[in-house]
Length: 206
Length: 206
Image (cartoon, rainbow over all chains, first blue to last red; front, side):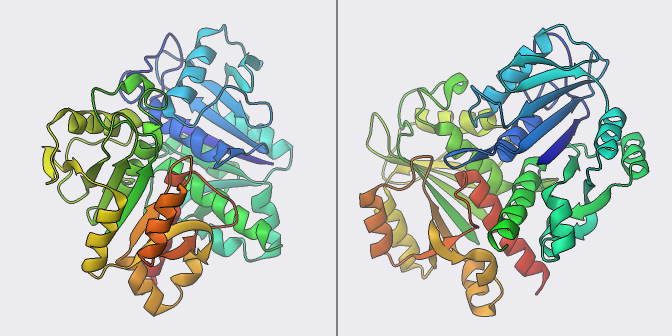
């Protein structure tokens, strides 16, 4: 099982978002949509052992978490508008602190990064924070011990604005290990692709 | 200099495409848009040493080539709708066999894969064909000779339907080397990300 948490610093969390303006009025929702595609899609199918948790921290608040669950996902295509449409539907139902399914495989609730990381830590899941000065994920997959941790990892990524100070403190307090995917700072969705490729390669060499 | 050629088997090549339906009526134009984003964008800027050549083989015909040139590109954002909008503008101008610029950094002309590969071959550019049974690009970057070829490479990828037989024959006749990016068949845009990451890593280790 792998989980990807993407922090949407300005991502709108209520009302009807415009699918024609995901980058603008929806608060760079396009960044999150691309991460969903990178995490769940392969050429002829879907990665079923993955959850993508989108933290929508923008207006009007409070923060919501939309989860895309690979195992039960239906009606999702790789284009940004497709995942955007499922996020739109998730934001139109009455949210509570408990997760509700809005469409098959998509869930929504009120929540923030701190609660999410606490849940994962309580379940013994290793946390990884994507950061330029982190350890190279490809190198880490060369060692069986760290490869096993990565295979069961929870990966935390920022959006186009990165991760703000208070969230970074939350991540550090949760003892996440810093990892990186190469020498150049890339789009969040590209980082997701590179993490999964490193894991695919490790699994093929087992 | 690196060039990416993406074959859009059904991609519409005339008339006004709908930005609200890139996957449907525009003939999986979303696949090509994602490749443009993967090839040209990094976290805080653009890769300037890259061209992306989209071969639009669909209706109404004949086939057109839309080129995104990193060096001179303006007004491009990472979302699919942004590159889709520039493709839309390129398809609305009168095309000829000679390239015309439709918007800054975007060029269009009539043309097909065979002519394109011939031009690259005449200029001594090494051709690489992305294929599951190809040599691993990460391994190839370990050898200085092949790394230098890759750094100057022309990369040929199919879309969601792959590469049809006649195009595959054209690619083989042009003596392209087969390369792969890992053990699992991925989206074209994900493959672009993985090729560029392998090159980034090689360059950082020089």
